Image (cartoon, rainbow, N blue to C red; front, side, top):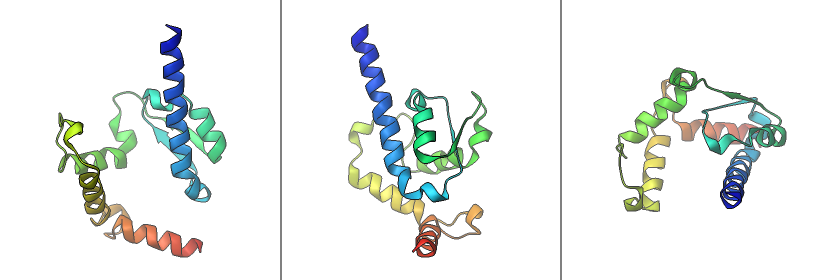
Length: 126
């Protein structure tokens, strides 16, 4: 049992560390994070403290509380259907899907692409 608890704690630490590393460059632009109730956010206090953000959790089965996340999941499903065996998906294909989705205009960005918006943000910060 102790090995399992140690493993789970280690997984939580790696997940929070990965989240912090990925978001740290955007720290000045972040105000809040809304997550689902997955185990990967068990160490949410560390993430909130390191990034100086308020951390919220969506209620179970309230997918509309994470609308943009659910929308992106739907877009990803156009390329990777549910029940897909991820051992058959290459890193190159993941990068292809990422580029396709980040090059797709979004209503929330006034029909600009995420890539364009990111470049505007980076240019503004520089």
